[in-house]
Amino acid sequence: MTVRTRFAPSPTGFLHIGGARTALFSWAYARRHGGKFILRIEDTDVARSTPEAVQAILDGMQWLGLAHDEGPFYQMQRMDRYRQVIDEMLASCAAYHCYMSKEELDVLRAEQEARKEKPRYDGRWRPEPGKTLPMPPAGSPPVVRFRNPQEGVVAWDDQVKGRIEFANSELDDFIIARADGTPTYNFCVVVDDRDMEITHVIRGDDHVNNTPRQINLLQALGAPVPQYAHLSMILGDDGQKLSKRHGAVSVMQYDDDGYLPEAVLNYLARLGWSHGDEEVFDMDQFVKWFDLDHITASAAQFNTEKLNWLNAHYLKLASPQRLAAEATRRLARQGVDIAGGPDVASVAALYRDRAGNLNELADAIHPFFVPPQPTAEIRAQHFSEAALAGLGALHTRLSACAWQAAELGLAVKATAAESGLKMGQLAIPLRVALLGLPQSPSIDAVLEVLGRERVLERLARVLAA
RNA sequence: GACCCUAUCGUCUAGAGGCCUAGGACAAUACCCUUUCACGGUAUGAACCCGGGUUCGAAUCCCGGUGGGGUCGCCA
Image 1 (cartoon, rainbow, N blue to C red):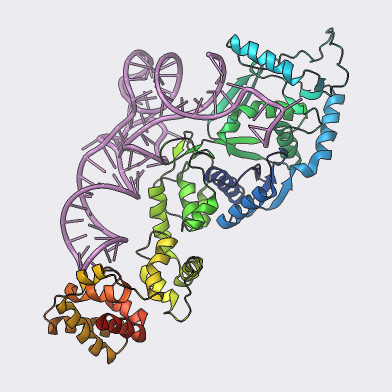
Image 2 (image 1 turned 135 degrees about the vertical axis):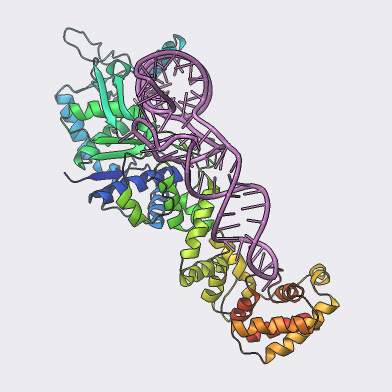
């Protein structure tokens, strides 16, 4: 049997980190088994679903590189199919009309809560042999409720949590179609999972309590029951639950913050799943290793520090061309034009081992394209008489120096020696003169990449002031 | 409140009864490298929630407690 998994977000907001991990695991499982990964948009909540959110989810998936094989399917486009199934269930008495009003329900729940009971529908409209139902009130359209079994247990072997059992007596006859005829979540999921022949449902563990209802529904429909794997939640950096109000951000925010998608993916793969001591691996490797057996059953706290470390790691591996493109994009956003400056890829290569993220990289590259304007304070601090004399001598020497790192390094050393300066006493003022900062990569490399013209021009500017 | 899930260093985790004096990674600390800042390298400290049981032997199995979390919608 072909493995078929799905990711089924509701388009009520962006794709956040928890959703991204669910998508990643579903995607990886399908890939691992040569199956299909299906994207399904659960947009039946018309009031809260938006096209912008759909796009945001698609963008997030694309940025991460999680391509689906089928879909996206939109539940709102499957209404006819849902109505058809509801009619069938009504006809076979697997479901029934319930005329209880919302007000009546509220009263019932209040009573149950007052008695410290679990609030649930009492089955007053459930048809039973020998039971007389009330007269349907005129003018109020009914909802459709599923006739849930009242005895026995529903159980499944959860692929991450092990066997889970619910007594049917804990479940009530939930609504599968609203008074306006639109189907509800648990029902749509079941119809879709069946129609799309989903074999493995990998989702957040906030769905554990829906699972017994869905299994009962599936069985009432005579449909096969898929495997379920419930992923525990991801907590914020502070150990608190992630929510729209607290800490939950779009995966696209990670792009804005300078993270590489492969770093985010690697981090997410290791959050709640493991393969022995392996920490750093790409998605090809992940797909080869991924299994449901090694998913952690307990909640995991997000750790930005570790993500940062992975990001720095992948930055070191990225090509200078790619980094140049990313940095250019970010500099352009700040209004910095790289035209007429040194080769961006060469500058990026200087910094890829030192930057923690792409924004830091862009910031580091910035002064190569915008000459520094040292403040009086900085001048006083770094440009002593002796230092200026050294820089003057260096200007002369560099005018005639072969423009190649090794030669340039020798030139700086020789100038320092001649001027009676220690290397640092000349190299640091030189850094400040060239880039406005007392620290930089190896000074010979900086000189080489900046180029003779810009170096001499920037030196002259400091000497003239 | 009811039901369900869960519990190893600060954090992510390895661990399928003896291989555990509990391993790895991030973070922390120290040292080394170095013209600066980083990177990198080496080293150190740091955990089995508690109580019962099963067993020759438990981080691992069972029961209870406690802590944490989820769900109880005509939301998904």
